[in-house]
Image 1 (cartoon, helix red, strand yellow):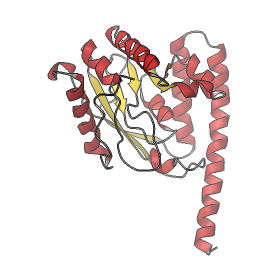
Image 2 (image 1 turned 90 degrees about the vertical axis):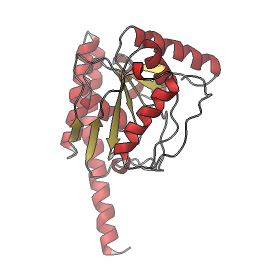
Image 3 (image 1 turned 180 degrees about the vertical axis):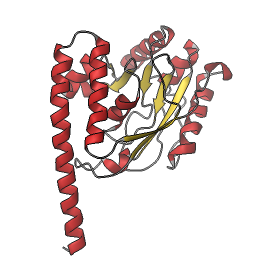
Length: 251
């Protein structure tokens, strides 16, 4: 193996190992706090501190662009999905009153599933049409009650750069409830923790808050979804991989 390749591999191994050490060093106390602390807001505040601390300690403090959301905001946050880091990234930059919608498989992941449950995350089961419709009704109800929600409408990610098909559920909920959507663009996460690797790499992380998009400007949820998608693509610097399946049941 050439010398430069050997050095590059060594740096990746050292940095990746250090990043995992930092993650465990912070996540274990956060998990204990989530177990013991009363009050959802307290637990979420601890998780927000923990997520921001991890990224700062590994040299990837998150650069925030645009106008960040505040405790007074109730817009439905819609972000692109690049990496397993995305949930932590949004946790670090969103106000703690936001509830994350997460795919149901995460509930079975040791430690992570427990912590997410204690943080009030809502698990979405897309295994069949009945569960998808049930999840859709919950989304609409939550939106109408003014609960701030954060969603990754692509539902998944892989190593191919680009914005994948959006599921309509979050947009249908926002449009029916008359709630604005706040597009959020995450960049750097795909490079920092690629889909085919468990070793984080050095590199910057950026979150950009785009202007909110009002539900009242659109005649249906599809038009609203397309506007949000355009707003994300304008800043993502990745290709548009697909057009949404407009007949797909809400997630």
